[in-house]
Length: 602
Image (cartoon, rainbow, N blue to C red; front, side, top):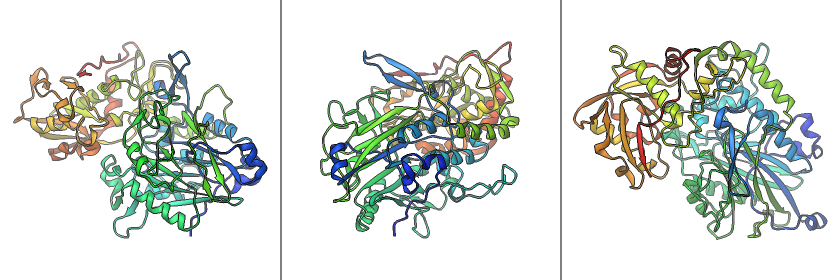
């Protein structure tokens, strides 16, 4: 039997559009409505279901700092404007405002709600974020790769509730209740039993309307998560899994289906309001989701996606040639997608036509609107618990140091982090590192000059440093030959990383040229790779520092798994905060590096 969505609803939410919402449940991205709403209301055959969706929230309860907290908006004259966005107080308010007047309204997400979170959420194993998602009315989500950061047992706890096995309960007399919405893990199974880890799908029912939701994460999750996080689990092909469960739902009489997929694409423009169906359907988007969308069964009516942190609302034809909406709402709660699914009561399916209508639109979660009071209260409560740790000053900066928001392969903050890792491990007896490498995905934010609290402009707090480096990966120092090191550099732009390069951040002294006019491994100009001005020797052994994720071959860097004589140093966060403290003061703040170690030819 299908799993009927069980939802928690606040009294306030229940009053919106009458108590019908109490039974409602999920979100997705839908296709252009092909029927006239006024006629439908008179005839009673069709009903418009509002789908509100977002993805990759990553525990950003407070508005993200720096460029991480803005979206790019394309203006009528062709110019671009940076708009501050995000924060749970504004996301909740945006969703509640959008739901008004829509008795059939459901809200869904496409994974990575938690993990790589700022300290306010990460310090408490993301319980604050799950609590916030319950309050803002999330109905269903797929898992993402970051839901596995702390392993299957922790993911199961986030779903079912209970206090943390080591840290216990954080508030006296309060037990963590878990998610009031289902996490869907259709393509994640137990290696021994073959059964899905959690529910593979769920069905939203209201007044005869049924919509099924199937949730998957990217098949390559084991490649981008620490091995312990996915131990004992198997990750299956996204398309095969979705098609399998679409048939299951069809046999149960559920003809309307939405797929929540934690995998995404790369639009041709970074502006959230870019028209990616120009000049033709899906022409303005590339990446893994395009191939997935072209092969997912026509039984699925819409695809809500994520993972790439991009914003898009595209129409990509399904295998039968019919248009199907594929959407993503950037990240960190800065956008939400509002989609109309027109449900035909007679066929029990979604009406999908080629008619161009405002079927799926991304909206900015702007910070000029009123704040949701319950979210303000939640943030205040958890901030009080985090304050003793979060507010401690660890350094000073003279200006913004771009990391996640940098628009270049090498970021100034990436340089700072790699320098910090080298300094923490270069001494004899502490690893003897000669260089350090940092994966770009591990740099989660910028360091903003403007104060986030009462610490003062230019002061870096422990909480802000944690937001940049939230994984607390241990540093490893290993022996790599020059040939292995070169192979690792080539893997940045070849193999699984060729389509979407993962350019490593490098410590001072390592320089080379990246020629993006070439393809694959040839993009790394071999003769240009130098350490402290000396050409890399393929036969020589080098001591290389990196986090344990990279040392384990994460992010497609298989060459690093062959490292020998491993030394385990401090955590990446301790190295980062220690470096900031040692190299800055109120009188002599740290200035942003030039980020000129990698020469990029375009």
